[in-house]
Length: 611
Image (cartoon, rainbow, N blue to C red; front, side, top):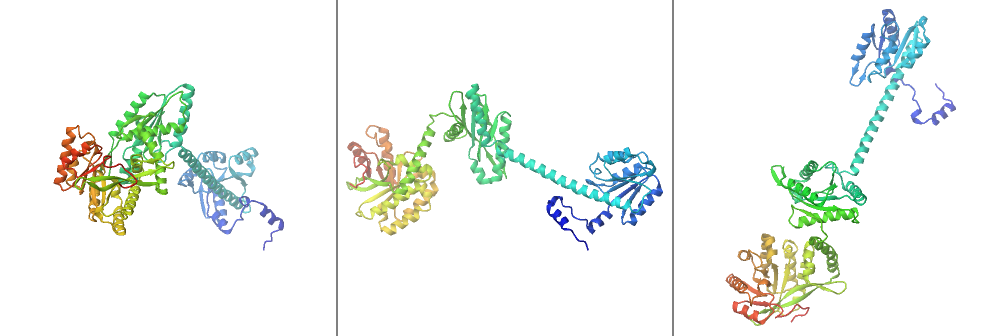
């Protein structure tokens, strides 16, 4: 029984875990006894003696060599992968032409042999102190002298093998640390790369572009240089991405990035800004050259064809250019914004074109107008700042007001009243026009239930509302709740809105007409295919576009067209309305032509009160 002193226990507690050495166990000894030992020497009797002594001590894997060549061959044959299965070499000095020092020098050249310990044997009578120090200084684990004894030799071998085991574990740990360090360096490099590069395409990212723009601005201020930023947006990329999936979209983006690399110089900064948006920053270039370069890129992409799973896609791009010139106080955000605005203008003007930024671009004024109006419209919906005005429509047959057109108005925070021309285009652009349509329907139905039964109302609808699943249920519900005769409700839709989604709009109109409501086609005659559409579009009333009415007295062509519209409408069983009638003389002409209804300032202006 072993008794540990308190001092030993305190030392064990004080040492950190990585410095505490676990005691050798039985399994460790068994492992060491299974180690492969190479015994080399020129005297057969000495080799046999050492082998026998080791076998008696329990060592099982012992090979011998009588020449230096055999030693090298054993080492070579012992290599398996990246290690050598020889764990220890016992080298007798009787082996000529290969000393322990020479063997170690050779073994140190190969990773597979470098960690193998060497026990050097020498005759006691040939002791050379200087040589012993040299051998120990070159990796010889220990020195032994003839005659060998059972008390000294096997323990030396065991010690050398234990040293080998520690060397192996230390080497393994060092390799693991080096591998981990290498992985960390790779991760650091990747992280550093990803900080200012796009992961998918390998191009720079927005951060890289902003840094480069800062440098271009400094050069423009201090060295009077010119630069240009090209803002590139792929046209209709979303169609491909949604149809074929993101894998196909990513593949295309990678190909586009490679195309940019082939067109532009390595000095130019190539960037992927967003999903399908790229940018190129070119230094030392003026506007004409920048436009020429952008046109080269546009032409290249315009001729580009992308195929995926048998489907062929032809690409194009809209490119905006912002020139960075000396003497203009700009910041990075302004440059990016201006280039983006130029790209937006290129897209609004038909796509697949190049546009140089100008502060006078009308498209940007429209966009800014929309941005300013969007919160006003949302607030008006939330705060009930919409109201209705009504314009009377005169029946020629009865010589009286037959119905009223419901016209929406919006009241601003300062009390200003805005007409539909101010806010409806914005509402259509931002997707709020359907909510306005539904608001009008609700309020007209609630109003008409309080009116005499001989009064009818028309309700203007946008084209998009006919794609809204809420329209039909709402009309059906309001007819049921108010118990209003459905023929007192006339829904108006413009010709252009009807054409934009013809089949879907036509189907919805048929459903609502099945409830008993009537429909009017507004702005009739404004389109080139007006007569073609009225053959198939299920409406009850045609409202002749006001452009044909305003000069009706003096324009014989307008007279012919209006007369033909009225005749054709009547032949199809439809009623007609003339808008913008302001003179009695105009009304008299329309009566001769057979018009059914008159609308305009001659009859009455829009008012919150009914005439």
